Image 1 (spheres, rainbow, N blue to C red):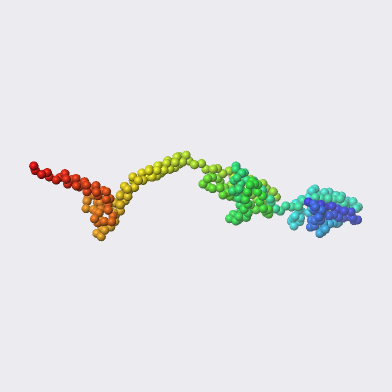
Image 2 (cartoon, rainbow, N blue to C red):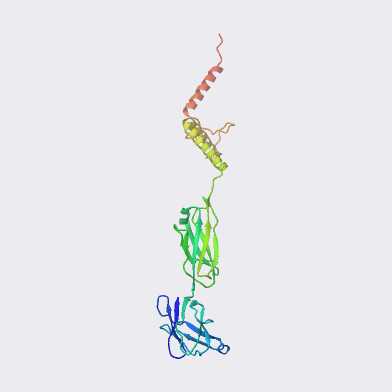
Length: 305
């Protein structure tokens, strides 16, 4: 605020001074006195500008006329002043100078302060949030990026009150595989000195489908059962699997004339062609020899008596 006052002086003038609220002199403030009555006084208007020390003097005030003293308005005047309290005051000039006029001048605010509150369900979600500030004419450029930490309230850096449009986009690092949420966004115009905006961020934890859980559980039980059976019957199934693999391996091994298959119809490879890879073990061959000897004994003719 600035204070404007007139002091005593001989002649028909008004002397004054302009000071800031803290008592410091304020220069470059224009004031004017506009005639209001009687009718011949309405055409008169006088103005003045404060000096560097805050002093001013309005000259040429006519006796018998009434004036309205106020801050001068119009393009190029008092850009740093918003208004005065009171807006104006009326004076009547007699045969002396005037004194005692006083105005409180409020400076114009040329910056916009924006405060944003984020509404969350869980306080720990605040640590995952970041607010990105964009300007409408530069949507791909992040002007500011602010983290919330543990406070739901954040104050944006001072913006020029130029009437431009901005928008805020919320960003969170909560995993999409565990949470389902939308990215909130809001816009505002920098045309007022103070604005308070709010965003809502309510992520929901995803739930696992019961049928899917049951299916996974059944598969896990079957796999565990098969593994257990394989371990339990490892000694019994091991030799059988080894013999089967050996038979397949010998059947697929190439020989000079192609694949070496046995002479039988069953396609079992001959052991004579592959001496190093016998198909039957020694115990099995012994059993086969014993069987052959028994057959031979049975078909041996008996001697006549």
